[in-house]
Length: 220
Length: 220
Image (tube, rainbow over all chains, first blue to last red; front, side, top):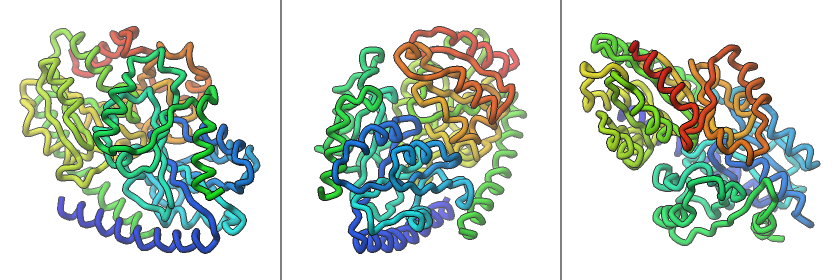
């Protein structure tokens, strides 16, 4: 196991150095970067489809991370914003997350200096994306109420390291046994006082609040 | 990137050797092993809570894989079956999947020779668990209709390598925009003719079919 742990540490140290380069490039270009993470199917893409058109006066771009397919990238391109797609299965061994080098490889397709905000939609995965900084200024995660109240306790790192928790699919609450208070207690146990927003990307209810958070992040 | 790919290959080769040892031990003990995988919150634990008590005459044990916490293991112990818990954050660098060595470390807590069936509940993750054989005889995955129709195209490996796809949370279908036919078409595109079962672990509808599949796997 020592071998595994050492490889792991080496990978993370190498990542940190590249993340610093990314951050320097972001700051030089004057673009603020959000790392958007979640489990698969929690609704990151649907949320962005709703929220990005609400961003008045913010020049936004999207970097899409997926193991395979251009499905999400195509949905973002339909919003008429600059989009860069990184498929991890092509050159990155099918990795289950974006790391700083993968993000860096995707930056060449984006007009960084012409953007105020870059949203990086990470690979759908509650574990590894949280381990890798990509040089972002802020992290947000989308949690779906269909995933169960105990997720902050089982996958604490992502909940603990993000600056905003978006609680999505609130329209399904009447049809679930999900206990919202218990979830918020569990969230508080692993990350006290982290801001959260209750919304539904499907109905649009509450999405304006997330758009406002993006605007504020962009400094608009 | 070559370095990453080489480390990756080395890890997988090492894993295959340990998986073979596991398989030999399973066969010697006369126990059949199911590797149960899914995204976080798709309902693996809830499904087992419903299905395991339906297994007449099958001596079943469970190996629980989680990054952190004993929440799922406690739910399985409440069923009065032998349970072994592997937390990946303790000795395995917070890995996002079970590999053959982690499973092997959990086998010491199980009375293998007294079991007909061992269900390994993998870490909730649609990507990496599918890369690592653990010596299992069969793979099943749980997919939740809340995750979206396109998941087989975005995360093909797990859908492609499993012997059964359980489509869970069917009770939520009237409240979603989920197109079941489109999902089944996407599934067929990545894994033609893989069996699937439509059910709801919450209401219990259709779970008997999954229990029958487990019984058949156990050779009962």
